[in-house]
Image (cartoon, rainbow, N blue to C red; front, side, top):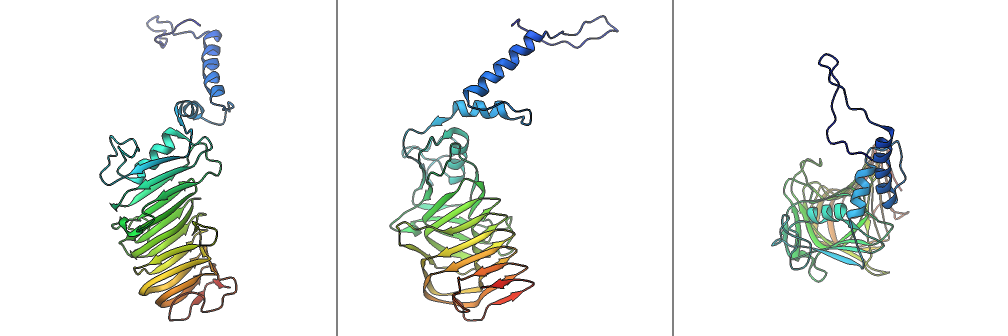
Length: 325
């Protein structure tokens, strides 16, 4: 293939002849690109304009050779951190972005270990390369969860947006803000746009709007660390504990839930254009407020648990096509 260093536009007025590209040169470029795609295991497609980028990323990713832990600490750095225990990242957001952009799971599990301390709001976005059902875990302190705090200040504490399914456990989560919109916070864990978040051994502190919020075809559900045990604590108030909205599904099942003191809710569960599943749970402590609100076609299911299956001191309500079953 002959070398073309600079292409020139033709100009009949000045007699400049434009660059003529021979078929052999174009075929050579196409062959070079196809070889890169082939090495990355990508079949060329005329419907995509990102295949070369994807192939280069795949070929330059670090393939995991064992179950791996990326470390995060308030003393770490998002600029110079590498995710090792000796040189951690400063935020979960950066650690996740690094994993999305640089790692190939290659069949292995990945853990994000947060050291003790208080972190600002975190966002988890994007799919991990090579994910085929491995266990992805975000974990704090298993002995004293409140030693690791993610606190959203007028922001969602933990947001999962179009993210690979993951488990979050062993930490405390709080969020200020009362509007209930994603931009102004008030939400502890938000799962949206197809994300799937599991949680366990979490202490939910005060959240201005909701401790758990699933929206736009995403889900949040309890996760058991053993075959028979799901535990978590609610130590702070919120307008709602569980929200399923706009196609989202929020669930807790088979959980031992401790309501520390008497917690106050507008309603313990809210389903609006979404679903809430809550059954086979045991609750320690008490709560004030309505037990549930199902509206705008939302469904709250307690698997036949009855009108008093959820915490609260006032009857639940349905409206505008909402159902409680």
